[in-house]
Amino acid sequence: MTIAAEDDQSPPDPTEIPAPEYKKRKHSHRRNRAVRHTLTGETRLHTGFRSRILGNERNIIVYLPPGYSAEIEMRYPVLYMQDGQNLFDKATAFGGVEWGLDETAQRLIIEDRIEPLIIVGIYNTGEHRIEEYTPTRDARLKKGGGADRYGQFLIEEVKPFIDERYRTLTDPDNTGLGGSSLGGLVSLYVGLKHPSVFGRLMVMSPSAWWDKAMIINFITSLKAKSSTRIWLDIGTLEGKFTPHYVRTLRDQLVRSGWRLTDDLHFLEVENGEHNEKAWGARADQALEFLYR
Image 1 (cartoon, rainbow, N blue to C red):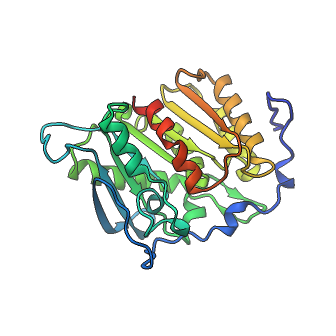
Image 2 (cartoon, rainbow, N blue to C red):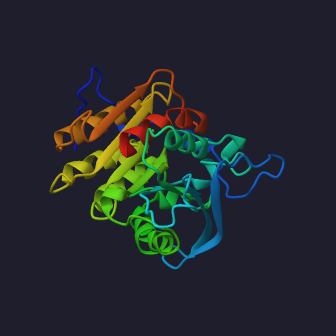
């Protein structure tokens, strides 16, 4: 299938895309002991969370909103985020640069700009990241395709674990999923495939080019538009081709029934780069759209 863009220039043939930038990023779940912890607010770390479905283990870090321990009758929406080691803490983040998502959420909640929420950071395992975060096997790269099992892991193992231990609102309207890069790709794919579980999606700089832009064809194949609320963004400096694919992804979401500024917000950041600092800098806007 040929994918047409609705902007000034059509994306190139995906097979012409050079080796992607992610190959230079060596993700790890290990702590950088030379860097001090930078956690804000109340966080809880669950180490060695074992998955029967995936056959591996990882850490899960949970940010709790101000007042969580005092308001013992209150329940909260939950946002599940990929690449959890990069969200809150320089000591565990890729390259020692975190999103600062704990500081951002804390500030927005205190200023009454978003509703209080729980944020669950699910660490990647490093070696399995590409496999788990991609819906299909990319024939050119000869890897990937484990997103369905990863989604099963989120729905059948992680979410029940969190719902059992924390005061959560468990319905889809109060359950979000998010991430960046390949983490954005898997969040959009799993979220739209399971709208009865996830109702809010934070999709930052998604790797929409993966496997000849399969995510766009996946959205085209959806039998019905869900009520899922979607934040989608991209930076203009995120490679020569990726912004084109993300704009095409936006256009397909609109064709499928999502409405810009209503249940779909698209942001293109001038001079925005593909890194944790850039994603953290606009996380406040994403949280306000999804949790205002």
